Length: 357
Image (cartoon, rainbow, N blue to C red; front, side, top):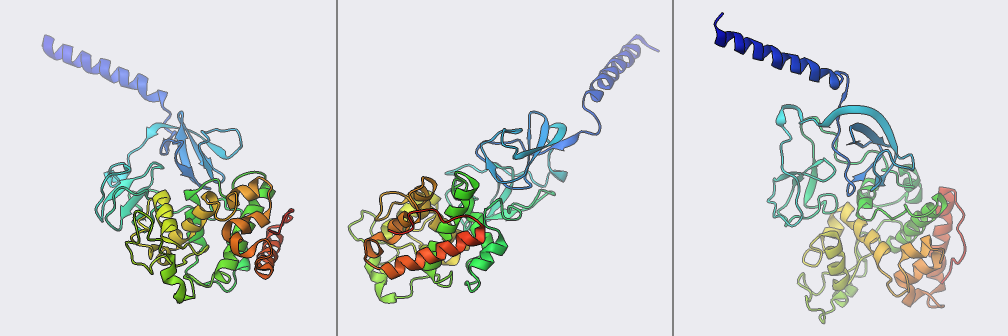
């Protein structure tokens, strides 16, 4: 054997020896790592994430609690292979979603939670889990389904929802409601288990009243439609003077409300208010937006009224208090209260005080 061939053989043995020493440090039985945990991501029951070399699975909805956490929400699945393994065959080699980037219809992106979405319509970087008219879940390379399983930890089960709204319009789907929850994670997730159920019952009781039991998608009195354009707003009424009538579970109306809701949700509701009557998840999101962020004619948001103990009566005031409260229409107030009492009964919690406004 020549000196050169001997040196090459020796080098090969050294490299092979190094590999033998390295390979056992990662056990052959170690599972592949799930997508790394991210504080901004929403995790639903059954979702998995890796953190510090271990896989974890969410037992219920969670956000911003790093595994293993302190509330028991994460189930430790054991060590993993260190880092996220690439999808089989590289079939999921799509870019990360970037807010504010223009996406043409057909674009596929990887969202912050490691799941994939495809653009159904051109859009300037709307959030895929909020702007569901523009984005649809996309499954590739053996990745798990993008839609959250089950009820996503919502305190109202699908069976209870059906019991509350037996005659509802098929447009108002339970899955649409669950899909909308991620827009405002604090909704029905704040306070004790009793308070969470009371808030959900209060929201759904007002929704029942506004829509006749989730029957009506749009306002029934068409004569009112031209009334909801405040031309004094700097953006005017680009969809038309009669385009901002009541729609959805809380009957969103007025051009300024469509503008504000659209800005908050990343949706073009000012120019395309019909999204609220065509997409169930968008409809539910506008209702939750109002519930979580708007005082209306009241002094607090309906969410704050329920979680801070002000009582169901203040949710009525925030939604339609200028017409119904202070003796304005006691029959309408009683209708809302009666429905709320029925719904907390279904959820097995007391109604609390301050039911009237």
